[in-house]
Image (cartoon, rainbow, N blue to C red; front, side, top):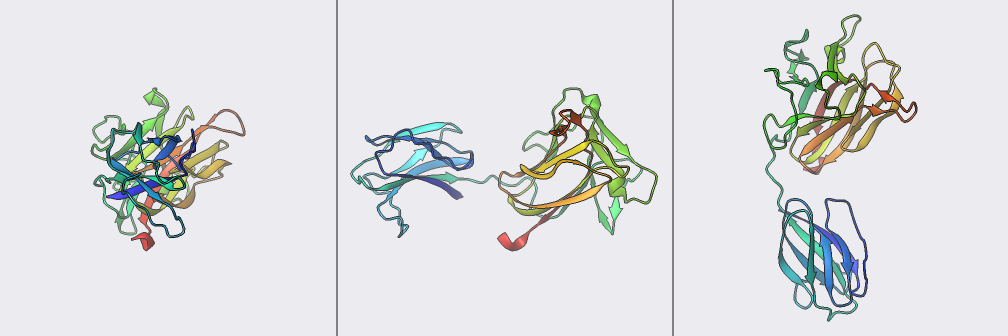
Length: 282
């Protein structure tokens, strides 16, 4: 169980819009009669309103007036509650009691290579470590569409309804690692998303992007909304790394889409992903 909160100053503020992202409560209005309206957050079981007259001491109270406790959650919507206004110069905050769901994949190191089982590199073992092989389809031939909280707890969200443009290739010539030789891409250059459910925490994510033979198309890639490749033409396969704080239980990799520099849909080749826990937050 954890908490998330936001502060609104005073009781005479009207139609204030204070927001700290969708993962935190946001107070949308608070009038002089004490009616407070706030947006709910996901996974919240209940809310409470706390007040303080001295932020320097950082001492918060739920005693009435004006505190309110045990406000039940109704879902990811909006709630209103009336608080006492006896403390005319008080500061108020809404606190959400958030229950974190159990992780479908525990914290650890994960090695993912984007190629089908049975490809020329199967099974893929590098330096004594086996890599998961993930294609657009399952080993049984069904499309691997992502469904939250359903095994195998990873999959694709494609931009195009034309499944035939979801392609895989294996580059044979040259002295390249099998990690670089295999890659997936969208033949229309549309944007696609790979979801990989994982216990929240801090991780180092390394992505193999591009293909050994290079490409004239500008590549685009983000991880958890953070840009790793921004409209870049890559002469070959490259490894890019970024440290992220995962909070929602699913690692999101988005690649491809329309190029900002050319205005056209452009290829982005996705080769592999390595996820390693960063232990300073444990």
